[in-house]
Image (cartoon, rainbow, N blue to C red):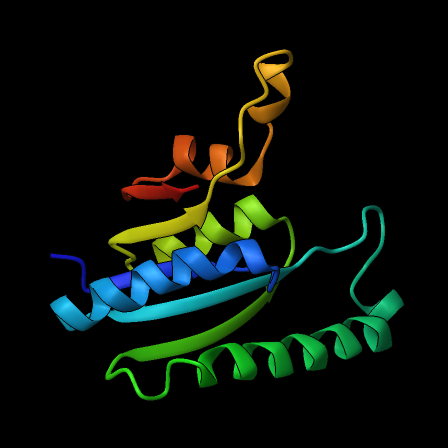
Length: 139
């Protein structure tokens, strides 16, 4: 069914549910989970201008990734950590293509009825529209 599952995360509590769903699916279907954190690059700068800053962010992200993965050590699923740099939507879509991802599981945001257009600009909505793979949006 789904052999490669991508779960983008920013390590907030709301991203726990997509990972939990991915772990349950992976356990049933012997799938590999790719846990991806994208460090957004500051606009109009180069990586080298803020290399120390980005290296600190990566070390912090790696610790958070390890802590998150440790919660699922007893589940017999393979979770692979990944950290990339760039625009979140573009990096998620690039990762999907490069790793032949079958399913992306992401947290969804509530659509405000008074201003629904604002919700169309979310990362999850953009990924859902632009991805060639199925995207499961979780509330």
